[in-house]
Image (tube, rainbow over all chains, first blue to last red; front, side, top):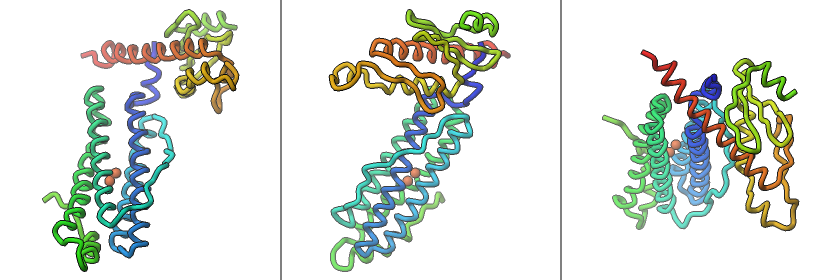
Length: 175
Length: 119
Ligand SMILES: [Fe+2]
Ligand SMILES: [Fe+2]
């Protein structure tokens, strides 16, 4: 008997399902960052608004990268429905706390995906995921650094204004 | 048509339960679902879709909700077939499809060992 499903598609149904869930998560991140950009803009934090807008674009790029992979492997990529995006934040600091929390959740999600790949010995998808695992280093680093500005600079007086100016300058290099 | 088709296309029985069978045609790269008095042809994608649709039916709701019919229409866009099934039949079809996909997995493992990893 021919292995018809395998002929059609390189990845297993389970991996395909997890990848589609990840596509949805990236879409959610993208919307969340846009929501944060909106809040920051309306509250006068222009640099942070730019920072989150850029992050939103990056998440969209992540979504499309996963989307293409699923299709390239012969799978069914599902355009996700994104709902329940938080639009109101208690304060400037909460925005950054939420951002870090969201990135931690994404890292965890990729770890689960990687664990599944190892279990199935799907080294092809594993190799593809490596890019994202590396990316999460940078994503978490930047979110953590941003939050640390609140400790280093402090929120009193011109604190928030100063923090806002520094957010856009956070960058990550491996060396 | 049914038995004739099985002979002509040398169908392989992938999985059966008391309510039906699913066959694979290596010649035509397709599947036949013998269920509910129908002998219906599917390709890889549409068989996966059928499984998804059947798995998404809320059987509990079907049984408990008295404000709706006791059966469910099973079909999807682009599917040439429609099934009108009660709860028991849905369970049977679900079992048939899940058994079939388990056999696909098994067949995949066997193909790997017998043909793809031969040294
Ligand atoms: Fe991402
Ligand atoms: Fe991210």
